[in-house]
Length: 93
Image 1 (cartoon, one colour):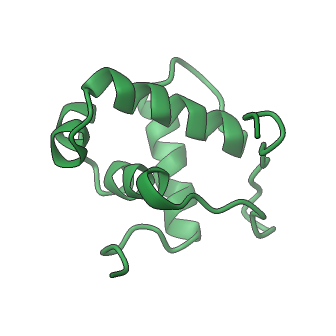
Image 2: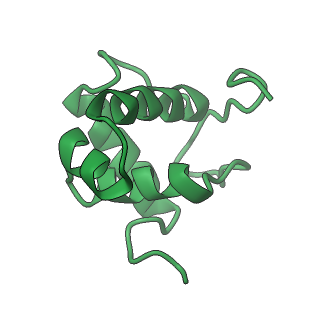
């Protein structure tokens, strides 16, 4: 499924029909915890460039725009989305 087919424009007053799973959920959680791309990459055994790319892809899917994929504004919006959807805590076993 392409990114455009899974696109979800997030609105605070509406639930998002798409929820990241697996590695995507981990990346969202770690961004919400304030980790850098380098720290996320080290924890998940990915390059920082792959992490930046995945953050950009996730932001596009959620309709989060503004700036380049690694911009602070996008990271803050992604963290806010994660908080709204309960993805900031510890991962489920």
